[in-house]
Length: 243
Image (tube, rainbow, N blue to C red):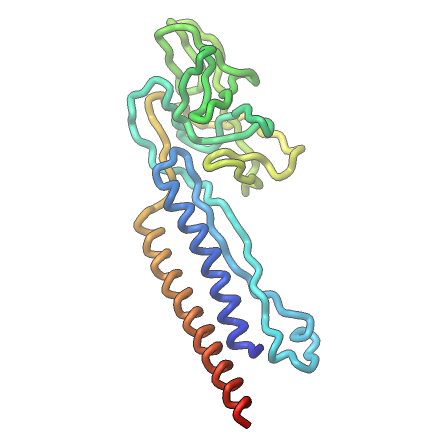
């Protein structure tokens, strides 16, 4: 297989992976606290190319992908809902999940049947290292995270942060866990809690759509190159069969 067709196949595979990432970002454009993903490709030379051995012309560079998460903040909107909470600054809410403690900026919380503050998926939100239980009709969250129920302080919602750059992985659309299981978060500094507000996705739908169109066109170009190669190969085989 010559290097041209090899590059077309490799390029088409890369474009397909890029489209998957872009499509997932667009699917979560309305998911509170969602952080968009990105993918980049790096050329890795094969051994034959590096060594300059015979046949290296048919052994072009391979493309390896690298995924990253964009942790920039989404737009914060006023909702007026008691249990919608946004963070003004760095950091995450701490959450109990079946996989262990996780972290999120998705603040559309609610109370479950046991009066526990939980995420939209039903995971416990933590305060002072334990599940937050709220019994009372009047609930407020102060800027520093203190929880007041019927005017009485009952605890503080946990807001934590990790060293930059973040070494976190996704375990859901808006949940994260550290790649290093030994990494312990610290209390977030200078971050304010905003009750009645909700942070949206940081996906720019227009930008994502433009990139999808560009990537689709690139993929179509690669596919045409592959089809042309197939046609030429088929023609060559037929011609040889007539000799």
